[in-house]
View (tube, rainbow, N blue to C red):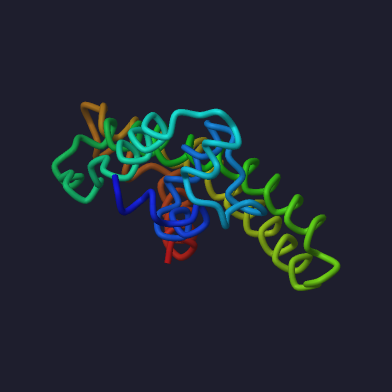
Length: 177
């Protein structure tokens, strides 16, 4: 707890993005006022710094996913997990990042014209990502669930639609890389 309280808010966010959500929840600006310590920010907002530090530690010490053995999970469970964990997180965070980028560009864009380019790149990337997620959720995952639950998997895998599914999977794998 002591070490976090010595860092500025922007330093904490730069070290671990998960802290940004905590600061946002508490209404603390980690961009333009990121040069403050937690104590300074809490004092200005009448927030109990212990509560904030507790939530930060909770967020920063949550277990990492790399401890899960995803290879042993049934396919239906794995596709549900990807949708509810990763895709939902992307759907939540992209608008938040978009909002922050617009704000940073509006405030600092005159001094740094590269910010407009950064925002354009983000917009294009998020459009591509949205298309990717839709193909997974609307085409690939339902097909995987269908195969996983089928009595006769061989018929599904040898069906006419399988070749098209295989092409989409190849495209998605390339996009992942």
